[in-house]
Length: 302
Image (cartoon, rainbow, N blue to C red; front, side, top):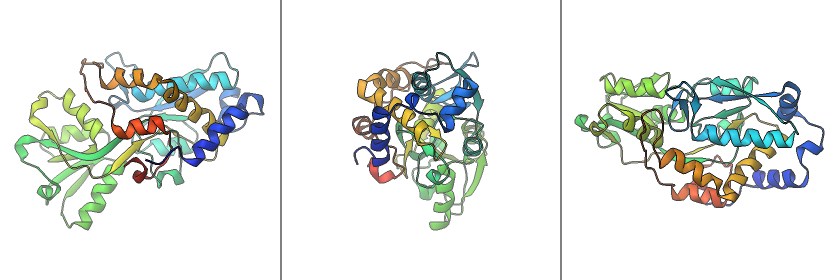
């Protein structure tokens, strides 16, 4: 595991040495100060990261982290109150809505990779997962080759569907790959027999299986195809804002507050059904906590 990525080191050092509040505000910080509000992009069904509960409130692990970031922003710009606006996003719309200024932070389950870093920026990684598939046990799918010539699904705009498309050609699998609008729709397609398998980040698959009518009839593939580090997304080329955001997340790690937030969403019952995912913190994420990084290189997390 590479230690703290150099851009983050520089950002944190600058944030400590020269607080944004003591300088002339620019970029997103100025926008928030001038309007008195910040817009958080959130997912509708990415449990347990960002989703609607049974009261139609937006909750989740990433949302809790984003709210801590908002507190840090208030302190930084010396604003006693910031109006937090919520804007739903999908896998396909999250990057365009960030780039055009509709949202200021994207609080969900978005993979930070080098390709996306050409369009947007990411804060310190807040989770590390892997790309796998889920299928019904009765379908007897045990490996990628078993999906040859079959219909599979993934969510539009994700790294998972991109990987599946490329691997389909590379291995001449002849899979019919269908793009679903969101994770819930993709899972439903497998549940109703319109697809045999759903490629997605394993933590999201575990959540969907745990919430299914009959969890025991499902199996998540044992092979991990790619490593997926999650990061909260923000606009590119806004170093002052990124300094504040990175510092807020790094502070959660340094003080150990991240442990309570993690346990709340991964080791205890979560709404709306009170399901406990019981997912221990991975060795990769523990390394990130010890050595915060915003790297989009999967090799850093091995």
